[in-house]
Structure formats: structure tokens, C-alpha cells
Length: 441
Image (cartoon, rainbow, N blue to C red; front, side, top):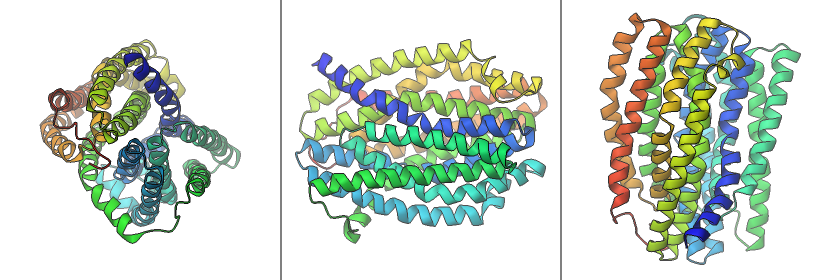
């Protein structure tokens, strides 16, 4: 059983890993291209990215919740029910994307100012965010479609879309930023076009899946509403998580322009590492949902044990790689020696915390796949409360220290959040309350 489980994890996790890193690669490419325009554009990108990722990741339940529901339907033997549930999620994504994209575009300036943006960095952030908001509907559709394919145990289709999207994003950004000299606006335009291309490609593939089982493509209001209500606990969880990330960006903005720019790069690298580790969590969602949908609680627990072990080893490897390259990576983003040193300081702490992060991401994915969203919402809210004193201390004290020291303390505080998140997850997964079987949680 362990060998078969390992094979299944690898089959799902390896394509998921390559697809997941596309999103942080979008930001890494943007950061590398914009970073050479100067410190102010890079700091502005940091502010805009924090708002943009919040607007999108608030609705990450479109991927996570859809994966769990679709996988349970597959485990219960209903492929038609699985695909129709996924289509409902896609319509919900489009509605939410249009609404949130419009709001972000209209409120770009107050949102970036609320994170502590000022001066030239604020102007750069507003320019980027107003344009990039046009890609939010596409990004949410991509989330929903990706959740469908993962639930169907197909992680290759999202991989193809992500690879094509990243290539198009990098080429467009280079052409628009440096070829047409559009500055940070060119980076936003290129990213929006790449995101819509990904969304349309995934929709076409989903249509072929639907046609194979004669699934209806028309929206069903009742089921779309049910999908929205079912996503509320994961929305609460995500709100608390985004609260942590926004508080960290707010604290970085209070440290000065150099720490804020350094935090943008370090946070983007962290996101890259997190999504690499999250590949095992994605496998956990699909495998756990399918096993519990088929009534196999013992198989779900055995797979969880294997995935945690895999996650820890991957965390050790990624952490060691980050530490080895912590002085090399900053060179890709800036020519400023002071900014390079500040980025390197953050990367040291980020590298040391990777094994802990791996445990958190894997167990979180398993519990999402099990449909344990209400417990996750409560646990994340308590973790946010535990993090608040730490970030307030950093914001109050660290501005009086050199940029590298401030960056170290900012990321030590963030590591405290990861530890506070790991403890309740460890307690929950040891018990049996999350092992609920059946087609729906």
C-alpha cells in the first residue's frame, strides 16, 4: 500500500509542482524585470502584488474546495457529478472575478496607501494595480478550472496551461517594458494578457471533459449558490491567512523603502518555495478526497503519513538550497549592494524555516481534501491573533535598526506565525475527527 501510495503521490505532485510554481514565477519574472527599473518601481510592485494576491487568494477555495468536492465525487463513482460541480465553480469564479476586479481597479490608490505606500513607490503601485486588476477574473477562472482537473486526478492539464502562461508572460513583459519602454505598466499589461490566455485554454479543455459525459455547461443558480456557501469556511481561513501576509507587508512598509523592496523579493521567493512544497499538499487534497469519498479512511491516513514524510524531506532540500544561494539570488533582482544584503538577510530566515513550512502546507492540504474547512477556519483565525503581537513589536522597534537587522526581525516574526500554525495542525491530524467518509463532507 505504501509503495502504491508513493507512486500515486508522485504522479499527482510532480506536474502539480511544475504548475504551482508558475504563479510565483510570474511574480519573479515581474520582479526581475521591474527591479532593474529602480528601487521605487520594485517597491511599488511589492505593494501592488500584496493587494493583487490578496484579491485573488481570498477566493482560493475555488481551487481547493472544488478539488475536494470533485475528488469525493470521483471516489464515489460519479464522474458526471464531479464535472458538473466543477462547472458550477467556474461560473462562480467568473462572477466573483468581475466584481472583485472592478473594486480593486477603482480602489487601487487607497488600497496601496493603506499598506503604507507613499511617494514614487505609491504612484508605481497604483499604475500597476489598476491595469493588473483586469486579469483578476481570468485568475479566478484558472483557480476553479485547476481545482476541477486536480479533483479528476489530472494535474498535467494545469501544468501545460501554466507553462504556456509563464512563457507568454515573460516574453510580453520584456517586449512591453524594455522594447516599447512602457515601464511598470508594460509589466502589468503583459501579465493580464498571459492570464486570460491561460483561462481560455483551460475552459476549452473543460468543455471537452463535459462533452464526454454529456454534462450541462449552463449555470445552475442553486448549485452555484451552494458552491458559494460551501466555500465560506475556506474563505474565512483565507481571510485570516491574507491578514497575516498583509500585516507583514504593512510592517515592511514601515521599515523604509529598502526593507520594503527587499521584502517584495524575499516574499516572492517564499511564495515560490511555498508553492513547490504545496505540490504535495495538492496531491493530499486529491488523494484524501478520493479515498474518503470511496469510504477508505485507513488509506487516507496511510497516505497522509507518507505525504508528511515526503514534505519534510522536500522542506529540508529547499531550505538548504535557499541558504546556499542566499547571496546569489539577490543579484538577479537589483544592482544595489545595500538592497542585495537586505534581501540576503531575509532569505536566511526563509531557508531555515522551510521544513516547518513543509509540514504546515502538507497537513493543511490533507485537511482541505477531507473537507475539514470549518476547523481550519477557526484554527487560522486563532493563529492570526497569535501573530498580531509579534508583527506590532517588529513595526514599532525594527525601524530604528539597520535595514538588514530590520529584515531579519521581520522574517523571524513571520516564522513565529508558521510555528503557531503548525501546532494546532499537528494536534488535529493526530485525531480521527477529520476522517469523514462519503461523497460530500
